[in-house]
Length: 104
Image (cartoon, one colour):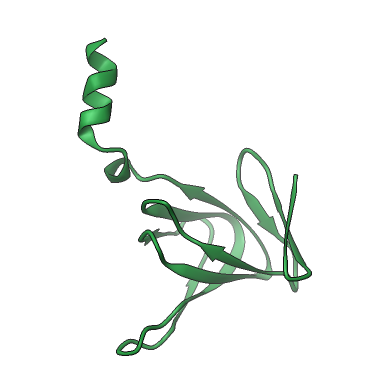
C-alpha cells in the first residue's frame, strides 16, 4: 500500500514503514502515544518545536527507539534509507481494558 504526502512517497506494510534515499515524511502522532523503532538503516527525524522549546533533531540506528506523545508532529528522512515501525506502547493500552479482556 502506498501513502503520499506532498509529492513524497513512503511505503507501508503490515510490518512497518520504509523510506528510500531522498524521501521525507511528515508524521503526526496519535491518537495516543506511540513508540518509533528503527528496524533497518538510519532515520533522521525532527520534532516540531514550541515557542519556548526549539525543534529537536534525532538520529536513530537499527534497534533504537523513541517514545512519542500524542499530538507530536515529526518530519522523518531516511539516511540513506530506513525501515521502521510505529508501535503502541503497553502504557497506552490501559490496564482496565486488558483486565476486562482476561476476566471473560
